[in-house]
Image 1: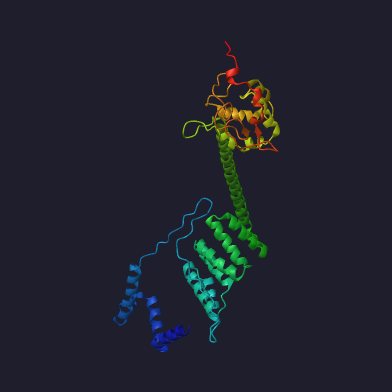
Image 2: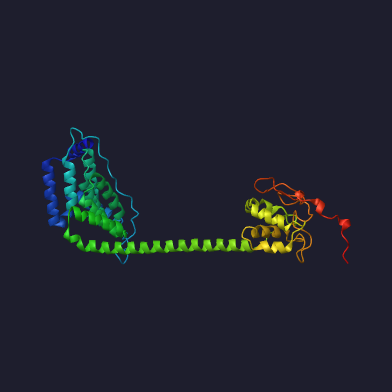
Length: 390
C-alpha cells in the first residue's frame, strides 16, 4: 500500500500545473465541438496524439470469447480457465492499514457493467481485506457470483467452498454453489446446497430452480438404485452359477471310479487308512461278523450276503470288496478268483486279524484283536487226510 501511494505521488508531480490543465481542457472541448481545429499548425501535437491512439486501437486484436456450449438441459462442462487467486488473511492488520480500500473496490465492482473488469475489482477487494486480516465469506461469495455469471462454475464452486469454510451458514455462498452445481449437471449436490440455502434465508425467486433440481436429483437417485440392483443381481447370479459348477464337479468326482495309483495297480491297504473303516473295526459286532464269515479259513459268501445289508457290517464289507476289485476278487464269489487283501491266504492280512496273514492294526475292545490261531487246529483235518472228491 505504501508503494502504491508513492507511485501516485510521483505521477501527480509530473502533471502540469492546474492552470495548464484547465487550458488543455478548454482546447479539447473546442476540438470536440469543431474537429477541423485539429488542422491548425498550433494543434499538430494534439492531432498526432489522436492519430496514434486510433492506430493502436486498430492494431489491437479483438478478443474472441469462447462461448461454452450448453446441453439441452442447460448444463455445461467445467471451464478450463485457471481459478483466480484466493488471498490468505494476514496474521493481523498493520497499524496504518487502509480499511476503506476493500469497501471502495467492492462498490466499484458492483457498479461495473463489464463482468471481467468487475471480477478484477472483486479480487482487489479480497486482497485488501486479506491485508487487514478481515477476509469475509460475503466478499468471496460475491466474487463467486461474478464468476458464475462469466460461465465459470468450477471457479465459482471453489470460491464458495472457501466462503463456507469461513461461514458454514452463508446462504449466499450455498445459493451460488447450488447454481454452479446445477450448471455442471450435478443435480444431487445442487439440490443439497439450494435446500440448505432456503432453510437459512428463504428466497421465493428460487422456487422454480429448486423444483427443477429436486426432480432431477430424484431421477438420478432412482437410476443409481436401479444400477445398484442390476449389479447385485449379476453378482448373485454369478455366485449361483459358481455354486452349481462346484456341485456338478463334486457329483462327477463321486461318480468317477477310484483311480489306481501311479503304478497302475490298486493299493490293497488303502482302505485300511480310511478313518471310517478304522472306527468300524473298533466295533465288536463288526469284528465278530468278520470272524464268523472267515471261520472256515476263507470268506463264506452266504454269510457275507447275510451281513451285506447290516447297517454296521455292510459298509465295512463294501469297502473291503471295493479294495479287492481288480485284484482277482474274493474267493468263493463267482467270477472273482483270487482273494481279498489279507484274507484267505493272501499276504498282507487285515489289521487285527491274527492268523489271516499279516497283522497289526484295529482290534476288538478288551484285547489285541481276534486271533484265529486260538481255534483248535487239532479239529481241522490235514490236507493229506481229506479224500479226493471225484
